[in-house]
Length: 74
Image 1 (tube, rainbow, N blue to C red):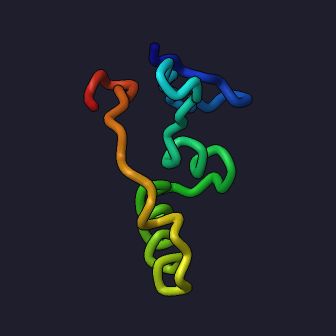
Image 2 (image 1 turned 90 degrees about the vertical axis):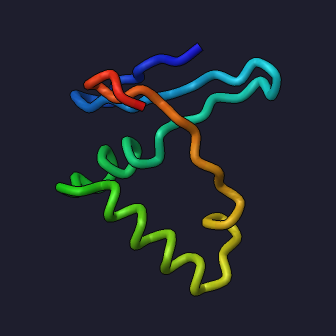
Image 3 (image 1 turned 135 degrees about the horizontal axis):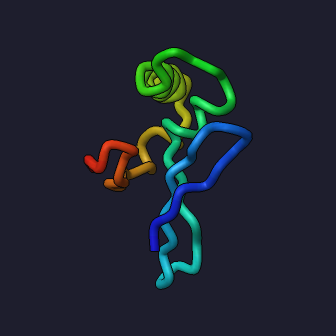
């Protein structure tokens, strides 16, 4: 089950995984909500690189899930 969550006026894509009983959220959408960045995808890319250089495992353990965007693309 995939849904769109609203945070104030911004949309955050989400996906329910019944097998793991967990919600997954689009990090790019969350970054857009939290930072008001004009380009949240670039913001996330730069942040991942910085975290990787610092030795954080966040950037290496996260796999990308395909989620539908507002225009219907994955």
